[in-house]
Length: 256
Ligand SMILES: Nc1nc2c(ncn2[C@@H]2O[C@H](COP(=O)(O)OP(=O)(O)OP(=O)(O)O)[C@@H](O)[C@H]2O)c(=O)[nH]1
Ligand SMILES: [Mg+2]
Image (tube, rainbow, N blue to C red; front, side, top):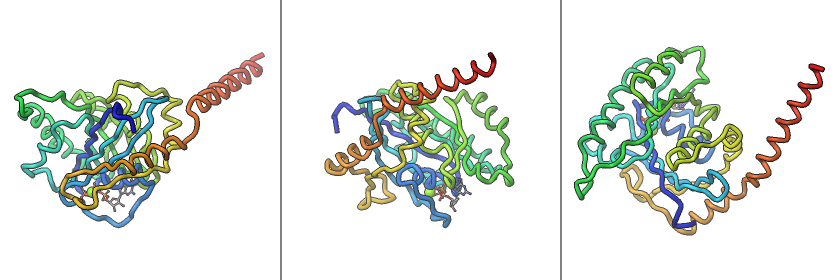
C-alpha cells in the first residue's frame, strides 16, 4: 500500500437496532445476520478502496453502539471524522426523530472540541441514511420527511439502504469516500462499485469494542490485491460507453 493513500474516517451513528452493524457487515464481507447482537461501545473496521484508476483511500469505519449517545467518550471518537452517516430505520419513527439528537451531538462536538495545539478540525460531511427499505410494507418514514431533514439541516446528502438485500450499500460507502477526498464518481463508476463485493477486512479482534484499530502490512497487501482483482476499470467504462452508444443508435433507428 502506498503511503500516499489518504485516510477517510467514516462514522455510523443512530439509535440501537437501526442496522448500523448490518450495513457495515454487508459492505465489508457481504454478510447479514438476522439475529440482533447489540454493539457495546464501538467497533472498528478498515478497507482499502480503489476509487478511480490508481486513486485509492483507506476507509476507516467506526461502528458506534446506539446506546452510547450519553457517553462522555463519544465526542473523542466523533471528533476528527471526515464522514458521518446518520442512520435510522424507515419502519421506526422514533429512530428518525432521534436523528436530530445525533446530529446535535456531532455539531456540538465539532464546535467545542479543540486539537492539542488549540486548532479546530474541519466539520465532517454528513449524510442521512434510511435503512431497512426492504420492509416497504412497514414503512413509517416517508421520502419527503427524509428529504426535508436533509434540506432543513443543510446536510451533504442522503440515501436509502437495505443491509438485508444489500441495496445501495456498497455504492454509498464508495461515493462518500470519494467525495471526502475530492473526487466525484460518475454514475458509471458508482455502478462499477456494486460489483466490488468480495473484500477483505482488518478487524481489531484484540481490542474489540474498545475503539482501537490495527493495520498490518500483510493484511493491507492482501486487501490491495483483492481490490485490484475486480477488473480493469478503463475497460469497464469503455464497454459501458459502447453499450450506451448502441442503445442511442437503436432508438434513432426506431424514430426513422
Ligand atoms: N429487514 C431488515 N432488517 C435489518 C436490516 N438491517 C438490519 N436489520 C436487522 O435489524 C436488527 C438490528 O441490526 P444491527 O445492525 O445490529 O443494528 P445496530 O444499529 O448496529 O444496533 P446497535 O448495535 O444496538 O446500535 C438485526 O436483527 C438485523 O438483522 C435491513 O436492512 N432490513
Ligand atoms: Mg451494532
